[in-house]
Length: 166
Image 1 (cartoon, rainbow, N blue to C red):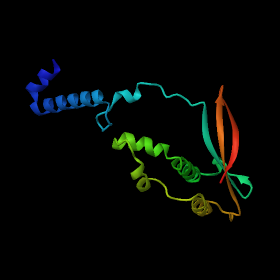
Image 2 (image 1 turned 90 degrees about the horizontal axis):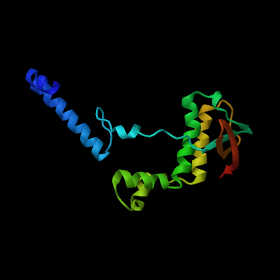
Image 3 (image 1 turned 45 degrees about the vertical axis):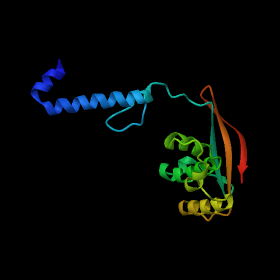
Image 4 (image 1 turned 90 degrees about the vertical axis):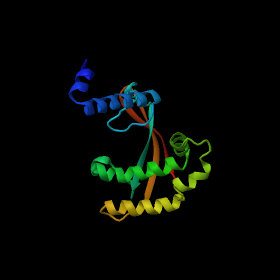
């Protein structure tokens, strides 16, 4: 057996291997967090399902809708991700879910002001316009942000329910 041979050859390496095996088994049994080089193999056990619909944002600056191909991927992230973060944190459902799972507390409301965004919509739009102005060459006269639902049916992407966010 390999472990017997390793034990005879080098006791330190045998001990380290046994420690690694035991640590891997404990993490898999507890379904705990993942720490390299120990991995929880259950996280790869189910296929990633494609959602039927997604919420997407469209940004209209001076009457023209911004297109992803006009920006680098990093710039496009700076256009869309602040909107995603702001509008998802206003619902607080993500915060409550993360707080319950990570901190294992049942009532996260007293901690919420410490970890959630405390901006009004007008303050956010003011900040957002400043950020966009740094990326765009022309002066921004007006910004409109639309929330749309993208529906995926038979490999065809359809955008419906377009509404202006205030």
